Length: 351
Picture (cartoon, rainbow, N blue to C red):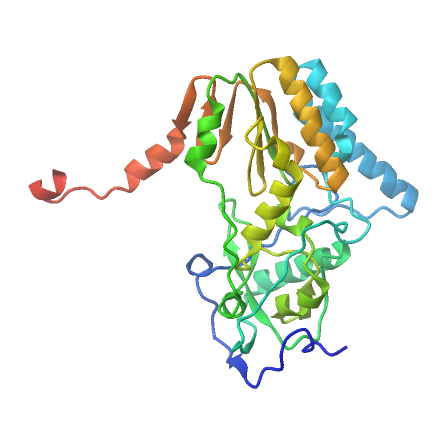
């Protein structure tokens, strides 16, 4: 297959030599990769789950994990809400349930390049032994899910790792070279302050968090080679949308708006992969929740049950506590911000 035929022939290739050490992930537009293994929610990613020996045992173990997760996260809910979640439990699998990559939908991620682009490929960054071990594990999982595939693309971004708060490693991809030549999509993103205006006088709230939301959007087949990345274990490209691409947020917001367009700001707010339902009565809320879950099922989107909150009087949304009392900043964030203020060293700084 001629991987250059999807764009005009490029006279120059941008080659970056090997860097002895990767840059700080927080200083770049990197792509954090999230994989879901078939294990109960909130199990640390480093724990290993034995592989069942037969298809029947695999089905049984996954069904058990499904039931266990439902019981864990619905125990304190109203019975009518529990029944509704059980009815739509296929929307909340404890693992990705695609038989391949996500289904075809009206929105795919495309990567349009400026006319004078240069193909960017870069030698892999240096990784420590623990990072290399984790890289191999995550690549195997992404391959198993069908989210990546082997590539011989002329493009190739390097990978690196960031340390998460719990000490585990987050795989990132440095797409700065590709983003430099990507035509920006100026699709309008919601304004948080305008979203909050809709929440007054509502008493019931549900927050739905999609499971690795970006990975639930396909990359257009002709653009998959542009997402290629290099590692010591091989050269791969994405079939689903990774984080870190310059227009990924615009693509995802477009998909969400298409699904919920007729009910947006009626009883649903959507900001990327965070979905908030709001209602004045429990009866209305049940009806609204059923509508949203039905739309997610119809379009083949999955949510992460452990991060969802159902029919609550108060939920967290976009860094604020939302309730019938109004909006309140997260106290932990306020405390952290104050703690970071430098101690005044002069009277002028104090005032």
